[in-house]
Length: 321
Ligand SMILES: Cc1cc2nc3c(=O)[nH]c(=O)nc-3n(C[C@H](O)[C@H](O)[C@H](O)COP(=O)(O)OP(=O)(O)OC[C@H]3O[C@@H](n4cnc5c(N)ncnc54)[C@H](O)[C@@H]3O)c2cc1C
Ligand code: SF4
Image 1 (spheres, rainbow, N blue to C red):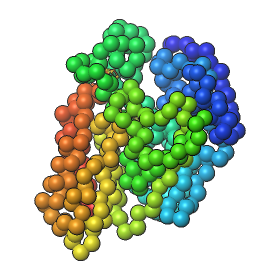
Image 2: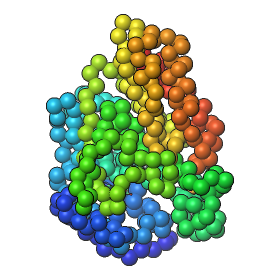
Image 3: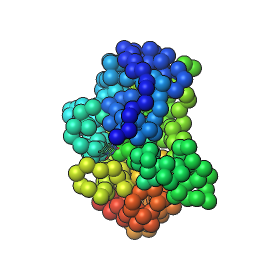
Image 4: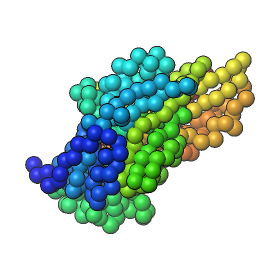
């Protein structure tokens, strides 16, 4: 058993205080700690200060807005799943949250922690001893990527379940740092680099997620995993679709587990207004095939996950339209 590194824990009461502490060198935020603490134990995190967000009450609310919801980043997954509005009007979100980890994890795991979840790889989520025996890897301390040795970026898989669900609800995120507040689309918070998957400024805090209500849409989240009970997604697909008089009005498809970022599938608007037929569905499925890029970062081969994501997306699109 490895020893935890030395660090100081701070418990701010406001987001402003949290941001001031988060701006310190090597400071790291902690939500529920269900991913951060295992990573600390494995020597993957070596913070000087850990900023615990659990006392910041302004980040623990779920508020109704004019056309949707504002969800504080410190809302726990269990709170999200049991919220009446979420159950009634954002079923896909509750459905995705319910698949995350186990019942006890969800009591402390937070929305913010899930959206900022570190990418995962079979060569990285290992003990220090294991990683050292393999000369580490590009993501941390090493020189090459064992998954794609010819490449120069990390291909670890983003595996959070909430991000694709939030994306189909048009999610925006409220971010605060010493430089001030900004609101951006959730999809723009990520990039295709497993070692630097978040486009956050140093010390930037995710304070809330803002989503819009989807009236008249059919929605579904489907996750494929090795163990049915408690497991990260090999592939997760969220779809919200709306059609009228046999024509496609809108469809939003988002994926997890396939790339180093959650993928909001681009280009679906080319099919809006077209009849809901085989040709349209084929065009949508092609977008999923082209934009998903599963690699050898999990024990299940990338080629298998490519087939799975395409088939899950096809079934969902057919079912919802
Ligand atoms: C056995 C097991 C199974 C799991 N299965 C799943 C699964 O199926 N699906 C899944 O999605 N996850 C899974 N997880 C991972 C984890 O439990 C969840 O992703 C959880 O939602 C993470 O939330 P947290 O609050 O505990 O995050 P933490 O561990 O506290 O933090 C995660 C990361 O987010 C950062 N962070 C936290 N809050 C903020 C904020 N407000 N602003 C900026 N950065 C922040 C932290 O610095 C850290 O880098 C599993 C974990 C375990 C141990
Ligand atoms: S994808 Fe490559 S660089 Fe990234 S964690 Fe895995 S082995 Fe390391």
